[in-house]
Amino acid sequence: MMAADQALPGVPPSLSAKVVGSFAYLTVRDRLPTILTKVIDTIHRNKNKFFEEYGEEGIQAEKQTISLLSKLRNELQTDKPALELTDSLQDKESWNQYLHRLQGDQESVSWFKSPWLYMECYMYRRIQEALWLNPPISEYDVFNEGKTQSFFESQQAVMASCTYLEGINKNVEELSKSQLYEHFNKLLQVSLWGNKCDLSISAGQDNSQKASPIDSLDSLQPFILVNDSNMLWSTLMSAQRPRQSGKSTAGRVDIVLDNAGFELVTDLVLADFLVSSGLVHEVHFHGKCFPWFVSDVTANDFQWTIRQTMAANHKWMSKSGYRWQSYLKEGVWSYHDHPFWTQPHEFCDMAADAPDLYATLKRADLVLFKGDLNYRKLTGDREWDHTVGFDTALRGFGPAPLCSLRTLKANVQVGLQPGQGEKLTFQEPDWMTSGKYAVIQFYIPELEEQV
Ligand code: F6P
Ligand code: MG
Image (cartoon, rainbow, N blue to C red):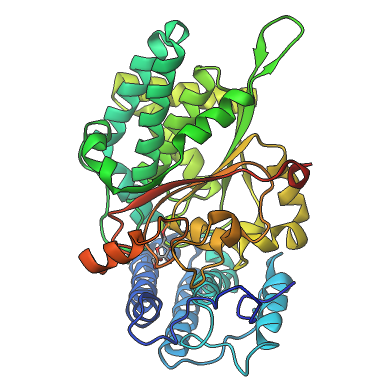
């Protein structure tokens, strides 16, 4: 496998903090140390809790974890080389191998010189290492407080989304195809804009959804730079397979999740609609094995969100929560995590480096990739020209028809019309990082790639 920074014919270089003043540079210089400082504060603030749970051992673990994290912050700020991982987590070897791969290409792999995607992922893995080396607190989720708070702060928007969903579900069987299409589009866009609410871009500051998401859709329409939703719809339609009985069997959708809080609720609402409308018979959710990029969904966040929704003191919200729980029990929905999602690879490496995951995704009729980081990994986080096709940037990745639902928070964007990127840059220099713009960008692999 090629390492991310290797010069490849026709493939542009990786985004990197070595470009002084770039978004990658500012992230490594400012945002990542801020996130680390917050992590350290959170652990320190929870000292008494650790003492109550684990006694003196908890206090020692708190101190040692903070000392490892302070060292990490110092390595980052002084551009020290990336070090091998030393814990015993199952992905340690593949992380270390990836580092060696990168080291094969350059003298040293370090924060301000190497691919931004690698270094940013590495920071989250090192946070995990610091905790893992201190057993009584190794399972502690340093980002849990922020994720929980963001869920509660978006309660109005969550209620509005569940109310809308229950309105559809009431008479879903009587809806015409065009009505279904209209609802599909709305819920797809709610899930799209739900991606605005991540806590990594805001370095952990409140970024929750306050207004009703359905009401804002019309005004947000002009900010969708690429909208392939009609192709998604056709894909779902062609996934309906006729059965002998004359009835049709619907397909399978996989959703590669991004953030907990409001965004996760929007994904669950979309998944519910896909099932209740009969468009799809199975939804597979993919989350992270450990806390990642501040607000990403872990198994714990997934279950917690469903339990909170069930327990809500709001009729439609709790009704939705109970149905989600039953989808999970019946196997109509399932949740999976795979270590590949918390590794630094571009997705074009998946077939070789995580063939089991690639094979899983191949079974889907459609894979939805939520959020910015997934887009960066789909396109390799490289300096692509904006007019390069999405298919080119995917560099052979295509286990199934796929679609990115992403608000732009990093400076990589492909598949635009000639001149579109230049015009945006002229009007709003930060259009790629402000989260104001979004894409619904679809790709269907050639048939022989899918088999
Ligand atoms: O730098 C901003 C950032 O941390 C990006 O690295 C990352 O792509 C994004 O925030 C996270 O966004 P999302 O939650 O949409 O993947
Ligand atoms: Mg995220």
